[in-house]
Length: 390
Image (tube, one colour):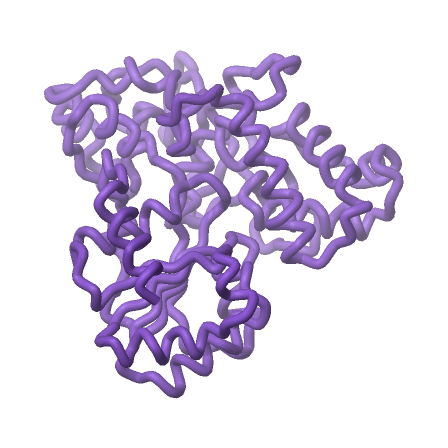
């Protein structure tokens, strides 16, 4: 146990926290069982350690552990939790909980038998804590940690402390909000960097970002999809091939029949793989109103713009980048469907948005997310401002 405390102390004292994540203030930290999901590379481990440092410092009532530790090949989580409690522990932070066999039953046991213990754990974005996991149904408060928003990226690089805004505020007060932001920083100077590499915090590491991103993408497929979805490793080349085909064409309506021929599998399997890629936060699916999986999506987008640059031989279309940025920034707290004539997205069933350039005669019945615009007017809103939604 003492070795875990020493590791915890070192990690908390040395964790780098250049920007405070928006999710930190959204979580109800009083809950007894909290699950924090997120795709690989978004900073879940750092988030746990930041929480430990902010709320507890090096107080021994809080302890961070990682189930990757070989100790847990011979010792159960429940026994570890019991010993932690006996030494005055109150908050146990468990990283990568899915690496521990039978983790959900262990957490359920701890919840039922140690009511004085609070557990916060991280897991993969493909985990379904409420829907599929009956052991924790109704017990766990589940949250998603996303990559950096454009706002968080600016705050990190410019040293600012700009606040997030709501979609309603953007619709009604976008001109005033844009003026306030420009008084502190010029967001346009940071936009291209964000689109290329700003979503994943590991761009801060002194390594080649593109190579690191490709490595992360492959780990998402190997672990977050194959391992957790229990798909045989021999099918990995098909999943990788499918992701490549979607990457070079996105955003586009998927031709499932052609994709099934290209990767030599059935249409049903293609749709299952597409859903897995979506759950792993590698792609996004956009549907017509009233439709959802398992129906074929109307459009497939990459999950974020950084992924669009992952295949260097492919020319990235500026309009595709604009739409992907808009979708990625909005879909955290909003519902998006495919648009109609003259617009790409229908937001929350009532707001039609056209992304990109604004025609000479703007349609008063549409909202415009306009590229290369400092401040907007009326129903014309700067595209970059949607990066401040979280």
